Image (cartoon, rainbow, N blue to C red; front, top):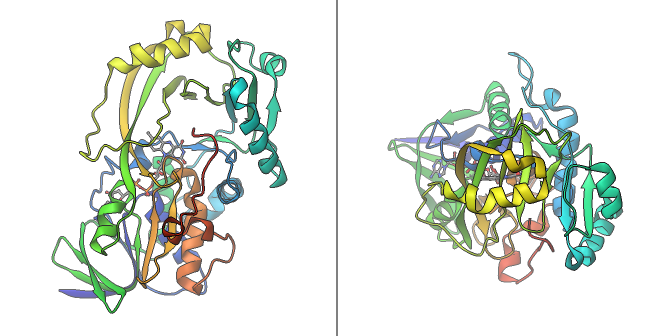
Length: 392
Ligand SMILES: Cc1cc2nc3c(=O)[nH]c(=O)nc-3n(C[C@H](O)[C@H](O)[C@H](O)COP(=O)(O)OP(=O)(O)OC[C@H]3O[C@@H](n4cnc5c(N)ncnc54)[C@H](O)[C@@H]3O)c2cc1C
């Protein structure tokens, strides 16, 4: 059976829903938007498994600007994402973000800080004495420098954000179909439709690939080879009788990340990203808490010596091996096809701006509020990487 739409979005988690929602909010666009989602439970979607940090501390201007857009969006989140049924439910915990570095990191921290401040981010470089005054419960013997932003950085609940985008999009008339996209139709260098697992083919003028860790598979349906691999990130939840005050989302030089989660905490080890795990396994190595996480926690915050693991999970980063940054926008030679892929561990926080940007590209043929051209696919062929100079 054949049906038609103006825009088909493949993948209905945070990114696909953000694109669909932004299109449905655009007064200059009145087309029919259909979102295809193969897993209604979102059990394996990164958006539901994310630690959902929001930070402006990046070292590339495009990522800083995307985050700034998010911070503004979150200030009025109920205006953007509330529905007739009530507010969005999105809560932004602005405890801040803290990066800790040793002597070898000082140069990179200074460079990042100067870019961030030039773009208006209130990022502060703190020496050890200032850090000790502000975070007296932290061991800082190995630390030379910290980079800190308070309000304007922190975390939210990714699954709640996804739900809010989706409810608002549906209220505006976006249709969600719970089927898998199994093929793309192409004609004369143009993607013209999507074949669905229920036998329906949706003809469309615009098709968006927002398939997360399966983005490479969907791009492959259009004959495109994206350098994106699934990389597994594990997250451990723990409780501790010691309360680390107003702990920010903290990253240390030995790759530990840790932040409060309600009355408990979550922690993990940041990944380098040059390896893939394409078998799709989301198995957790529970022993890692004892061998890798606990020693780092107990060293950094002696009060965490009594930390007790309460659970753990794993999710996929859709890691762009080329430069660890997103691939967004049109594809030369493949009209009508748009990418929202390769977010490499920071897509949740950038979903409002990516949604807005792609909706403008579809509606007007150009970016208007946010220029995302630095993230275009053609940078790969042109060997123009957009790198973060510290991998978090
Ligand atoms: C453990 C972990 C921690 C993270 N921490 C952060 C963080 O602190 N801050 C941050 O900003 N980001 C973080 N991220 C990354 C962030 O969660 C992702 O970048 C973001 O959620 C990606 O959203 P998405 O919609 O592109 O992908 P996903 O959420 O993975 O969704 C893709 C959707 O597409 C669907 N799909 C796939 N193929 C098809 C198909 N053929 N047909 C139909 N549907 C299909 C899937 O079922 C899925 O629902 C983290 C990720 C993980 C795993």
